[in-house]
Amino acid sequence: MPLTRHSHRSTLTQFLIEERRRYPSASGDFNALILDVAIACKAIARAVAFGELGGVMGNHAEGASINVQGETQKKLDVLSNEVFIRRTEWAGNLAGMASEEMDLPYQIDGQYPRGKYLLIFDPLDGSSNIDVNMTVGSIFSVLRSPKDLDEAPRDQQRDVTESDFLQPGSEQVAAGYALYGPTTMLVLTVGTGVHGFTLDPTLGEFMLTHPKMQVPADTQEFAINASNARFWEAPVKRYVDECLAGKPGPRAKDFNMRWIASMVAEAHRILMRGGIFLYPRDTKDPIKPGRLRLLYEANPIGMVMEQAGGRASTGEKPMLDVQPTSLHQRIGLVFGSKNEVERLERYHTEPVTVELHNPLFAERSLFRD
Image 1 (cartoon, rainbow, N blue to C red):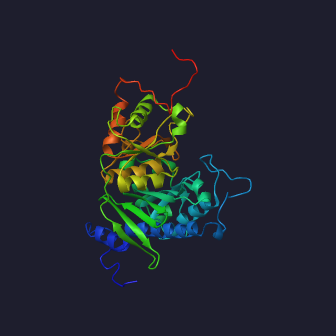
Image 2 (cartoon, helix red, strand yellow; image 1 turned 120 degrees about the horizontal axis):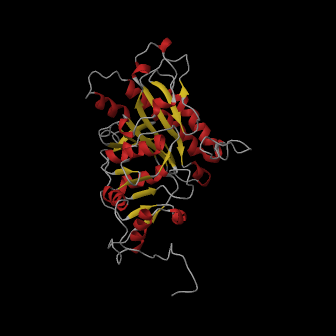
C-alpha cells in the first residue's frame, strides 16, 4: 500500500484537536471522551466482525434474558454495553452514563475521578439482525452534567439520578453513531456539521473520509414498516399512500420503499443519499407513545440529521424540542430529507381532502358496490 494513501486525510484525533482550537480555554476532557467512545466502537466492530467465530452470537442466556425495554438480549448487546462502560468510565470525563441495556443510570466507580459530561448510548442498535449478518451499529449522545455535579469536590458529589439525563435534544453537545458494515464508520457531530470517519484496519485509526455531510432536501425514497399500516394515524397513511401512488398521484413522482429494521443503517443511508425514515406513533400498543427511545436513539440521530441540513420530528413537532420525562421514554420518530419531514408535519395540521385507495393496504371484498 502506498505510504501517501492517507496523507491528505485527517485522523479523528487531528479533527478533534482542530475543533478544540476554536475554544482556547477548553480542557481537553471532551476530546478525550470522544476518543474513548471511538475505542469502544472499534472493540465492538471487532467482535461483530468475528461473528460466530467469536462465540458471541445468539441470546445472552438460555432463559432468554430480557432488558428494561422488554426485549430479548443478545450476547453482543451485553458485551457491547460492557465495552462502552469499561472504555469510558476510567478517564475522569464522565459524571455518569445511561444505556438501553440498563434500568438505572450507571454510577462512576469510586476509584475513578468524575467529569462534567453525561454519556447516553444504545450499545448495539439493530441487534436482531446480528444472527443474519446484516448491518448494525452503536448510537451515542453527550450532555453536560448539572453544575452541582460538575463543581462539587469528588468526596461531596452525589450520585447521578434519572433527572440529570432528562435534557431536551437541543442540549446535546455531541452525538453520533458507529456503523458496523462492509467498513466500520464513525459519524460524528460536535455542533459544527456532520463528519464521517472510516476505520482503516491497517492503521487502527478512524480517518476523515466524509467531511461536511449533507442530507438532500428532496427525495424519492421512504422507509417504513408496512406491516403496521393498519395501525397508522391518518396523516401517516395519507403520506405513504401518496408516495405509493407514484407519478399518476398527487406527488407526481415515483418513490422506492426501503426497510432494514436497523435504524442506524437507515440513518446512514439517508445521510449519504437522502430519504425519509418513519417509525411514527401508532395504535398498535396504545400505552406506548412510540416505539423508539427518545434519549439514546431519537435525540442523537435527530442532532445528526439537523446538523446535516435534514430534519427530525415526532411527526408533529421538532424532535430536539421535546422535554424528556423518563430515562427510557419512547416516542414516534420521523427524520431525513427536510422537505419530506415538513410535509408530514403539515399533514398533521391539515384536514384530509383526498381519499386514496392503494391496493397494497386497502381492505378487499368479493362484493363491491
